[in-house]
Amino acid sequence: MTSERMTAARGGQRAGGHRKALTALVLADVAFAYQQTAVVPVIPVIEKEIGVPQAWGAWLLSGYLLVATVAAPVLGRLADRRGRRAMLLVGLGFFLAGSIAAAAAPSPVVLIAARAVQGIGGAVFPLSLSIVREEFPGDRVGSATGVLTGAFGIGTALGFATAGALTEAVSWHLVFAVGAAVVALALPLVVRWVPSRPGPSRGALDVPGALLLSAVLALILVGLTLLPQSKGATWAVPAGLIAAGLAAGAFWFRREGRVAEPLIDLRTLRSPAQVWTNGVTVAIGYALFGTFYLVPQFVGNGTEGFGAGTATVGLYLLPLAIGQILGGPAAKRLQKGGTPRRPLAAGMALLAAGTAACGAIGGSSRPAFLAAAFVIGCGAGLTISASGTLVNVKADKEHAGVSTSVNSTVRRIGGSVGGQASAAIIILVGTGRAGWSAAFGLAALFALVGVPFAARVPLGGGPVTDPHDGHY
Image 1 (cartoon, rainbow, N blue to C red):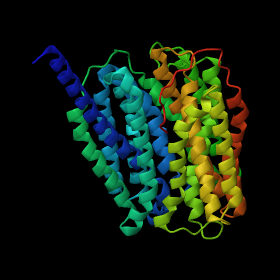
Image 2 (cartoon, helix red, strand yellow; image 1 turned 180 degrees about the horizontal axis):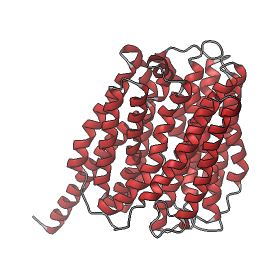
Image 3 (cartoon, rainbow, N blue to C red; image 1 turned 180 degrees about the vertical axis):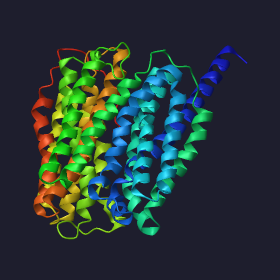
């Protein structure tokens, strides 16, 4: 065989290996995205069937986000030490265990705990992106990342579209069982087709920082959970928890800036572009995940909403997922001739308009409500893509990954608060017209306040790199 043929054969083998690796990662990401969001449409059903109080029902969303917020940087740091495929398998393993436990959960406590275990797998998507950047040649990284981002959107859409039908046909337990089956199918493919390599660094893991961040979020979310159930002097308990959480958060920020090996290296994230963008990202997370919690509750309400049955609740969220799939690529087209501030500000405006429209339309028009959900999704796609790009202004290759990871973490923090605060509002104000208007209105206000900040993110004339970030 000539040298040219041998070279071509080796190139073909590498290309075949890349296709197999990408297939395994796509299946893992579809399963992860499906299981992450499929629970959203059936939260109201779960609350009724196993007696979860509404304030604690929001923990099926925010509890997952709380654990994922901490687990993502932890697994990311361990991936740098132990290898990215190894930590991807760990994340999928926890996700599978949590899915099986959720499918068999006999009580609210077990189910919420199972969702928390699933949250440990919250690093699956970013780890998949890291593996692509590590294994694929430079000219194929962009297309492979686009495939993974699309797979994530498909998994999200499938979760919204099928969860209600599975629940009505059999039980909400089946939603978790189906997700577990797909994760179980992905695991051996990752073992077989994704190369195993040692981690590139030996940095220490900041366990105290991880525990302190967990405590910060838990204190704030538990306070928000107890707040609508408190009366008179008992309001001091949730208020004290929230105040303690904020104080602990301030201490965590100071500590992370001083330790040698922090959980999240905040010292690299002090540029004005990163500070402004991450501030806007809190509003993105609040509006998006607050809407995720509110829409199923609202459309199933027979008085103010549409009285939708279990099988159709998720369909009201499907336009949101489709809008997000379309909004991500549109950010790059909208940026042409300008900066990422343009799609970020446009996306924030769409988030505000869509969320406000949901509250204003109420149960008066299904087509209009579905159109509003689509607008929210388009806004989410634009903002997530643009914010991931903006935090990397002037970032070198090493710090680009940290910047993107922190931006995703900040979005989850905003989402945790958004889901819990939305539940608290409709409990405090009630499920009448005023309650829904207040809950959707506050989410819209968060997004609206972010518009001028998004439009004025200080770029400082630095280069803008594209992290290909499209995940929640």
